[in-house]
Amino acid sequence: MVAQEHSMSCAAACIRQLAKDNGIEWTEKAIREFNNQNKIYQNVA
Image (cartoon, rainbow, N blue to C red; front, side, top):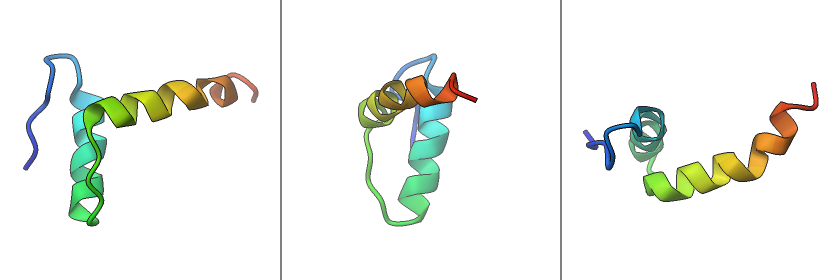
């Protein structure tokens, strides 16, 4: 089980755990950066 890197990073920690369970190692920082890059698409619908 991975621990949250920051007190407000529960979503990133959850995604990190799911990724780890599937053999993918990501940092919470990488997950947040990926999310920030894709926010433009969340507002298009």
